[in-house]
Amino acid sequence: MTITSDVRITDVCEVDAPECRSTRAAMHDYLNRRLPPDRENHLEVHLDGCAACIRAFIDIREVSWKRRAAAGTAAQDGSS
Image 1 (tube, rainbow, N blue to C red):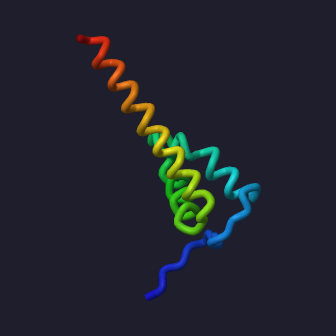
Image 2 (cartoon, rainbow, N blue to C red):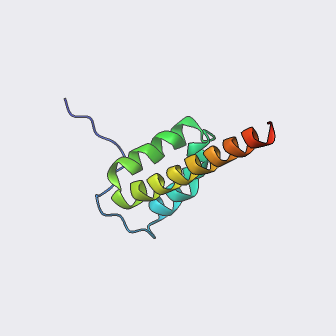
């Protein structure tokens, strides 16, 4: 059985392609779980096939983790 998607993304995406711009614009909302399920799925499908966008997502995710960790450390320092 072959599963196909109605969205076809190549391994090499143009960063200025509308799909890439739309995906990158939604990454913060995705990380904060603020996307509707259909948009979340569409973003995940795009990330599965676009090396440039997955690299951008990893960078954004790491910065988000660092900011959360720093905020947690600041909150702990302030409560002592």
